[in-house]
Every structure is written in C-alpha cells, then in structure tokens.
Length: 324
Image 1 (cartoon, rainbow, N blue to C red):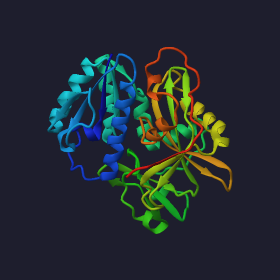
Image 2 (cartoon, rainbow, N blue to C red):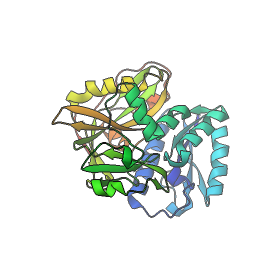
Image 3 (cartoon, rainbow, N blue to C red):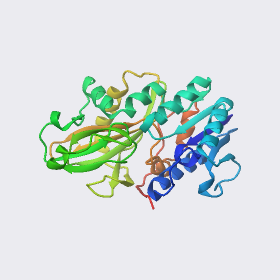
Image 4 (cartoon, rainbow, N blue to C red):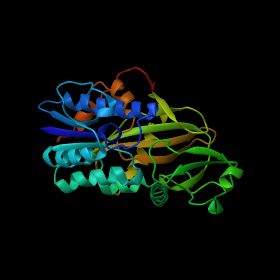
C-alpha cells in the first residue's frame, strides 16, 4: 500500500519565507512523526513532497519529491493523490487550504486518511463551529463578528474566523476591541470575551462508529497576550475525561461514520467547574507529538485498520512536550 503524506508548510506549497522557526518546527515535527508511524505499518510505502529550502530530507527509505516552487508542489500533489492508494493531509484551515486539499483526494476516488472535506469546512470556520455547538447544546464561548454585538467584557480574544493555531490571535482590552480591525490577511476576524481558565486540548481518532478519545493535555502557551503554543503536558485532569467524552459525542452526533484525526481545544474554569469547547481542528495537531510518546502502540495504525480494536494502551507516565 502506498500512502502519500502531505504537510503544507514543508511541502513547497508555502510561498512566503520559511522564517517562523516555531511554526516550522511544529510542521516538520508533525510530518516526520506521521511518516515514521505510518512507515512502521506492514507493507506500507511512503511518498511525500519536501521544500528544497529545508535542506536534505532527514529520513531514508521514503519516496520524496523535492520541490522548488509552489507550482512544482501543486503538480506533485495532483499526481500523487491520484496515484497513491491513500493520502494523509496536514494543512492550515485558512483560505480553504485544508478543505480544498482534502476534497481533491476525495474527488480522485482514492482513500482519504483524514476528516471528510464537508466536516473540515464546518470546523475550519470558527463562527460556524460556535453555532454548531449552540445548536447541539455544547457549552462554548460566545463568538461575535463585530464589537457592536458583543456582550460586555473587560478583555476580548481577537482571532481569525478561518485560522490555524494561534496565528493572528491576540488578547485585547475593552477599548482596543472597540477599534479592532475585523478583517486581516486571513479573512474576517472574530471577537470572544476572554475567559480565564485552564487551556486544554484532546485528540481523537475516529474510524466509522469507533472513536478513540485520547487523554486530556494541558496547553502551554507563551503568554496571555498572543496565546502562542509552545508545548503540552499530559495526561491531566483524568476526572474530566467522562465530561469530555460527552461533549465529543454531542459534537460528532451528526457525523456517525467519520474517519480521521481531530484535535479539540477546551477551556476548564475551575471556579465554576465549567468545561467549554473553544474550537475544533479537523486535522492532526502538534500535541500528537506528545501522544505518540505516551502510547504503548502505533496510534496512526488505527486509521488503517478495518476491524474493531481494543482500547489504546497507554504508558504509566507523564509527558512534557516543549517546542524548541
């Protein structure tokens, strides 16, 4: 079986300078971890694309197409999704990149080892995600398209409606929010009241009607102004796991046969014992780098299985992931 693994930032598709070391470390880490884990599966051959600006590809026994322009990457992507048996796509949600690339795999008739494009489209849109949560009784944070419609708050979170990670996400005072630009290079912006609490996340691997919920992680952020992700600690708050499972069931109730990896950001407010859904990432997230260290098995092998599996085996230890 041939699997094409595409990570947007490392692939050659990114036309901007590769000068954000933190973002590049996350992208490279996810790509190499994914390649490493799928390549451990029996009778699997891995194909990928690699931006020449990143230097020599750091792994062996992988079929690599080195690209020198976005046009070369696009041609390679088009060729590989139609010739590989399956594709695993990692890309930002903004500008419809993840949705369009996932849809391209689906249109090719080949197997997409990820979330279907229709679900990617929903969860890539943070306003649509908020409305989905409200309509399904999931506790979440009020989300607004303009300051005029906001509930009163001393501080706000200003973020892209179609974003990836903490890109262009900042904490604003009430006065700053009044005059905040509601458009950016990433499209329309949103405002949310800033809620103090524990920043958490949880991953899940879905295969039809079987959902493997991974342990809760604590997100380590650079500061309370830019919310830049710098790592994860796990497992944390095991007493909240049942509540997280209930939220996930409500979230995915309309999609009973979904396959793929999801990362869900949550906020726990201990003072009122409230667990809020913040947003949903319809793709592999950086916390996978910590999960694969904690797991006593190959997590991504589950996406290839066609039979019911036993619960995931976890090591009895704690993991601290820090991006350097």
